[in-house]
Image 1 (tube, rainbow, N blue to C red):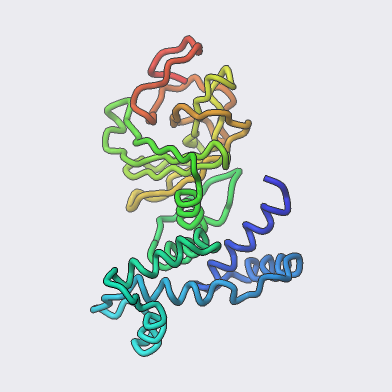
Image 2 (cartoon, rainbow, N blue to C red; image 1 turned 90 degrees about the vertical axis):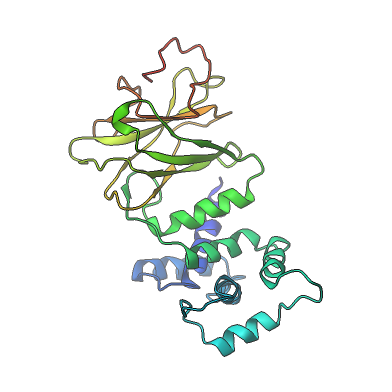
Length: 271
């Protein structure tokens, strides 16, 4: 990804977040700096989209979970009333899908509707609040998205569950995990591996992460250290702090369940 596109995506992230939650002082400074570089955008760029998202998400809000007054909500929704018999929510979503801002509209929806557990990780996107949004954008904007379930490779991790999504074109992906035991970052860290046997002789380091709560599913970004041609599988090991280049540890989780055939010449139990 070139630097200009990366800056624009960061700006859109911040604008989407600003439409549904207060930004930190540092985030406000970054947003204002990026707005100077992209004057075609304004601070309220996503506010109308967020209002539609909020109104449609709580279209049957019997418990008053939305902070939007009913009069305002009804006024917004009335602008999207269908002349046909399809549901109002479906009509709204169709407007999102057919608009250029589709992916970022979904960002607003996810920001409103999703709460995530705290996670600390290194080498990639330090603001955990972005992760549900970025995951949703990848899911709905990637034509080559693959998704696998995680499978435990030992009885110690049989309670773990979750999925991994990945886009070769986008060179990015996300892991969702529940039930993975918390680790002590001073002693060890979990490490992600990407299996691409056609391009790399060894699995590629996908970044390290820490689990700091076991109360809720955790979203983790994948940060490949080398370009990936065609990802065939993924794995997680427990390594020394900071991770390693080539692992000698047993596999904890794999996705898919069976390791793809390759010329690695190694067993199913180790990277």
